[in-house]
Image (cartoon, rainbow, N blue to C red; front, side, top):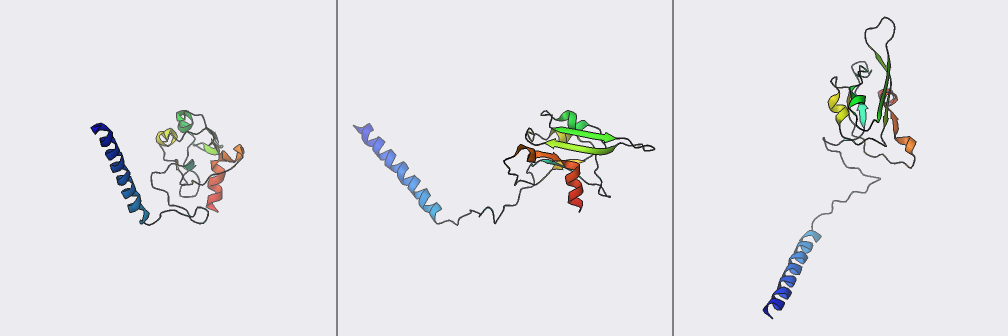
Length: 146
């Protein structure tokens, strides 16, 4: 009999504690944002898709070593480069990212010894087409310069 009333009392006590918390939260200001018209600022540690970092002349810092492509466990990066006549270095001709298979692990950014790629802060990626998530990062870098 004692256990029966003890269970009722403990249940009512937990109910009142929950109602007290709800009552306190009811009067706090709302933190909802109106999404299409307002957006939140991304934190410094946010990981979006990768992007190329431009050098001083606006050209990518990538030297086409292929370390990011080799380090990627998802095989979502493909790099193309060529060595022009009379030049000592390769020139980046294509840098493609298949974001549909990217796991955002960061292996590519960590393996780049030249600091040529970083995570972007772009977060509002929405589409119904798979092709919209196949990025040509070299083309995006050239468009961002303009």
